Length: 280
Ligand SMILES: CC(C)(COP(=O)(O)OP(=O)(O)OC[C@H]1O[C@@H](n2cnc3c(N)ncnc32)[C@H](O)[C@@H]1OP(=O)(O)O)[C@@H](O)C(=O)NCCC(=O)NCCS
Image (cartoon, rainbow, N blue to C red; front, side, top):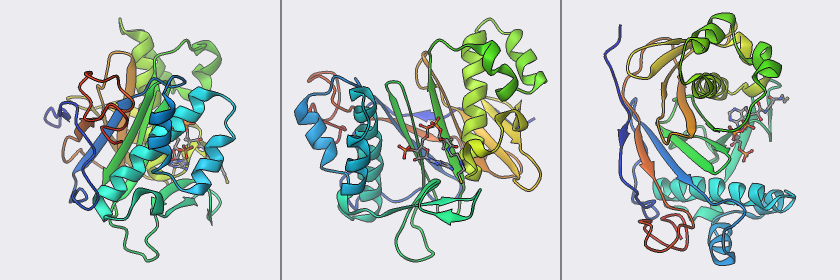
C-alpha cells in the first residue's frame, strides 16, 4: 500500500511575472486554479484577461453564446498563458499553442501543448473548466498529464451510469454517505486519465477503471495499448470534484503543489489584483 500523500496547498497567490518561474522538474506537478464569477466579470476584468489571449482563441471565445462560457474561456486560457509566460518569458498573447489528436493522429485539435517549434517542450500542460472553476496543471517535459474538475451540479446518474462507471466503481459509490460527490470524483479521475493519454472521450469512460490508493491517490486501468494512469484527487473546495492524472504504470511520486489565484475577485477579497488573475 503506498504511503499517504496529500497535495500541498498554498494560500491565494498571484501568477509569477514572465520569465520568473521554472517549469516543474522530475515528477513534480503544479496545479493552478481559480473560482471565477462567470457571467458577471466587469468589462475591465474581461479586457485584462483578453489581453493575454491570441486572436484565434479570442475569436473562438467570441462565438460562445453564453456570457458564462465566454468568461470561463477567458479565465482558463488567460491563466494558462500567464503561466506559460511565467515559465518561458514569452508575452502571454504571443505564446504558441498546438494541439494533437492521438485518436486520429492529426494536429490542430485534441490535447493542447506548448509549441516552441522544436521537439523539446519546456513544460507540459493541461486544463479544465467546470462551472465557476478553472484549473491548469503543469508538469516537467515528457510527463503526460491530464486534469479534470467537475463542479457540483444536478446529474441524472441513472442516465449516465452505464456510460461512465464500471460496476465495481458504481457499487463503491453506493456505499458512501457522500455518494453524489464520490460519483463526481470518480468521473474526474476517469476524465483526467483519458486527458493524460490524450484520447479524451474517444475512450469510453466505462472502460477506464479506477482503484483507490492511499491518501487520495488512485490508479486507472485503460484499454489495451493506452496504458495505465496514476492520479491524485484535488480537494479544492467542498463543491468541486477534481483530479490530476499522469500516464504511468505505478505509484504517485510527489503530491502536487496547489496554487489558488484570484481572477476578477472583489477588492479586499485577498486576490493579488482586484482586476484579474492575481494576474491582471
Ligand atoms: C477533451 C475532453 C475530454 C474535454 O472534456 P470537457 O469535460 O468538456 O472539458 P474540460 O474543461 O475538462 O477540458 C477541456 C480542455 O481540455 C483540453 N483538451 C482538449 N482535447 C483534449 C484531449 N484529447 N486530451 C487532453 N486534453 C484535451 C483543452 O485544453 C480543453 O480546453 P478548451 O476547450 O477550452 O480548449 C472532451 O471534450 C473530448 O474528449 N473531446 C475530444 C473527443 C475526441 O477525441 N474526438 C475524436 C476526434 S478525431
